[in-house]
Image (tube, rainbow, N blue to C red; front, side, top):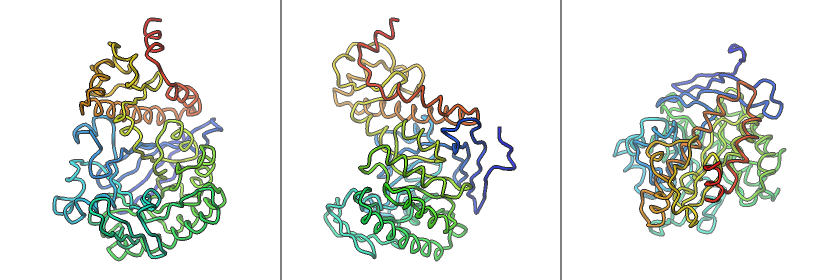
Length: 404
């Protein structure tokens, strides 16, 4: 147990972050830490995974189940909510918390990732981005100022700066250009936020985003620029966008330690168990990804013994629960065979139950991680769980294990 007096912490305008413990005697995870991120809508124990509700809903999940499954903070997306129903409608309906029927903290992505993912229907310039609306085909203009204004109107606790995610993280010239643009846009976002009263006047925190592609020196330099803005928290963006896993790990290991230790560090759009362990060892606190719910909707599920694809016929008659280690409310009493039937029949309930299970597993894994870090056992936990969670499990292997 680390002496509390030596651990980083800060507080400002209803927000705060406190490192509760670090890891002793684990050289492969020397920067891992356990903390709590305080927001106006509640505390988030860290490290934590945040489910993604792009259009104001976590697909297939009832609002009442989000917290029951273990979620403490969730996401929504600025561009998609701007397109439909529009930030004015969200505000008129009570803001994102009421709109999503969620009382806990909410974070919104700025729309910057869509500069990357919607490159085929967008035009980029130094002032901002023009998108072709996926709803009606109209031209939509996003600038740093407009991204801030939309997010302030939506009403999340935390909103992200508008950034430029480079199209190829291995193209150094392109990465330098995108990173420089991200820094210029960040300054404009910060100015717009301060004009509205800043965190003290709005009750909302702006996070900056580190870019730099797959280049450690560019990552460190970008993190230094971001740190100079003194935000409530900071993010690492532009990862898991085409580079190999090792390049992603190196980029995160370069960026995270260069960010302020007394502020939460958020790795954007990353969501597999191996990724969690790698990034937490480097000092990352928050994660988000569509992976657990997207996989649930395509009938794929993680379990403590391996990954299962319920489309495979071998699961048809398996009268056993998915898992007895990672257990999700509302799923534990439904057999694998029934789950497969629901999925293959096109019943919405199948995707919902599998999404709930995947989310529960991610959240419960984070609990294990938070418990392991102060004991110096994060690396041992990784070495135990990652091979099991990544293993492709067949029905025959599952049944053989049940009978052994």
